[in-house]
Every structure is written in C-alpha cells, then in structure tokens.
Amino acid sequence: MKQSRVFASLSALGLLFACGQENQGAPAGEPASGVPEALPGIPVAAPLEAVDPGTVVAKVGEEEITEGEVQERLAILVAQRTGGQGMPPELMAQFRQSMGPGVVDALIDETLLDAQVTEAGVELTEADYEAQFRGDLETWMLYEGLDREDFAERIESAEGVSVDEFIGSRSKDDAFRRSVRHMRLLAQVYPERGEVTPDDVQESYDTNLATVWTRPAMVQASHILFEIPEDDEEAAAAKRAEAERVLALARAEGADFAALAKQHSEGPSGPQGGDLGSFPREGVMVEPFAAAAFELEPGQVSDLVETQFGLHIIRVGKRTEEVVIPFDEASEAIRWRLRAERMASLRPEYLEDLRPDAKIERL
Image (cartoon, rainbow, N blue to C red; front, top):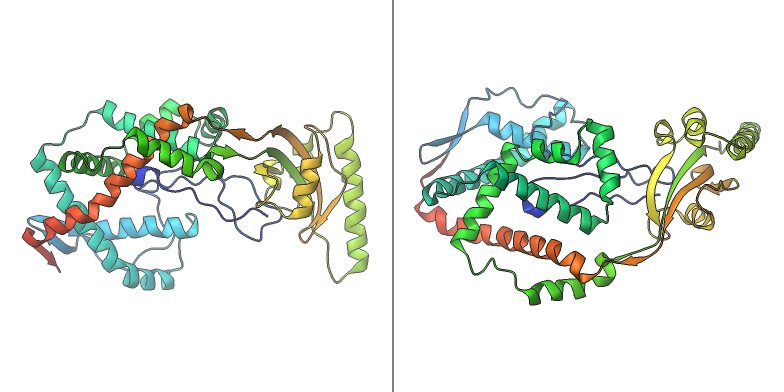
C-alpha cells in the first residue's frame, strides 16, 4: 500500500500541494490525486457556527478582523484535514471552539505584518508574484522528483490549462500574495540573516544527497484488483476464476488494460484505469505487489499476485533507473528553499518585536 504522504507547503507561503496523498489501508496504493492545489478558498461542506460573518472578533489598531475571516481560515484547515470533504455540523462547532482562538491569533499576526508592509513601502509587480510562484513550484517539483512533463499533463487533465496558465492564475491568490509581501518585508528587515551562501547550499546538498537527491529506481504501474471473500469458499473460488478470465483478456494481443481495469477492478483506482502512478521498490507498496511489479518489463502483465487486499493483475508502463541529481541542477532549488525557510524562521522573532507597541483587542 502507499504510505500517507502530503507534500509540504511551498516556501512557507501557505500553499499545500497534494500530489500522491494516499489513505493507508487502500488496496495496494492508489494514484496521485492529480494536481497541486492552493488551499485558500476551498469551501467546507458543513456550515460553520451560525455567527454573523460581519461580527468583529479582534482589532489591530483600526483594522478589524471579522468572524467571516476566521471561518474562511477554518475552512482551509478543515480542507487540509479531510481532503476537502468537510465535517459534520456537530464536529464543526467543536472545531471552531478548539481552533478558533489560534486562528484569530494568526490573523492578528498577519494584520500586524500587513501594517509593516505598508509602512516599509513594500511593493511587488505582477511579474514579481508570478516569478515567486514559479520558483516555488520549480523547487517543489525538483525536491519531490516530479517530472515536468508529467506535471504538465496532470494540470492539463485536471484543469484544462497549461503550466504557464496555472502559474498565472494561482499567483493571483490573495493569501499567496499576502505571504509573499510578508516574506519580502522580512528580507528587507533582516537583509544579512536571510542570505544563503554557496557553502550553505553545498552543505545542504551533501547532507541530503542520499535521501533527497538520490532518486531510487521506479516503476509506473496499473492494476486490476479482485477482492476475495474470506468466509465464503464458493464465492472466493468464483472470484479467482473471474480473475483468471480477466488475466487472459489482459494478456491478449491489443488488450486495453485501462478499459479492463475500469470494467473489472474493485479497487479505488479502477475508475482511473487502475493507474497507481510511479513507486520505488521499497517503502510504498506491500511486498508481494512491489516484488512482482519490479520483475516486469514495460508493457508486461503479471501473473495473479495475491496480497492481503486480494488478487492483483499488474501491468508496468515504464521503468526509471536510480539517478543522482547533480549539484549544479539542485543548487538553485536548495538556495530558494533555504532562503524561504530562513525568512519563515525570522517571522516569530519579528512579531515579538512588534506586539509590545501594537494596539490589539480581542473581542
């Protein structure tokens, strides 16, 4: 099975890109969810508490923070925790009660930084925002080992836009832009502490060479899953016979494996033609499944493979061998990430300096 995996936010800018997030316990893993998506604005299925969104819950100087802003931020948190599915109304009330105060504090901090952005005269152009988003995206893809062509195909399939159009659209997100302005402010306040030296980049590369910059051999595979009843021998035998029949169809010349998976697979990946994406030999799929997949050449179909999830017919689409990303290719992404991490680490310190002189009211 694929282990639960959520890609980290890019450059601490409040974006969560969910590619390949899986539920532990899914049959032999499921395909990547598709497209990185900026969370701000994702609606929550269940309504929040019946409080007027215009109610003022805090003030920073003359700036007001409303219940509507708190609800919007809570919706983002709910989407993160539930994959956008929302929460039942009874749980939402508890969530608002437990998480609301922290959300208000976060909005107060952002409002304090907004005031300093204005005072410092931090201004960015459309090109600046797009460049920041593009840099974040390129860095994220390199760290996560995502192929640019594959990413472009996912964007095209899910949203019907090119990567450039995706960047142009997502770089206009208000929360993203706010975070970028805050980062630029911190770079202006702490010019020396935010600098990343060539030695810093080299040290990071060397430290992470084995875990980040050495990419293991991978296979891209699809499967057809047949769930075998445990307490009904007759039904289990019938299901095994069905699996043998479909296996013969899958091995026939000109067979459309994806169509067979859509028709016969009982796994959640069935509607996607059984596509499981790419995975390494160890640590992602259950052992019998991984072992069988890595014995196949591209285009080959396995025998029936039995795991705790049932019987699988596996087809490998492509293989990639282990590769080490060279320093020259990784250095810019490392520099980009280290600088973002340093800016993020300076944020709490700067806010501590601002709070004593700030007029903050929690209502």
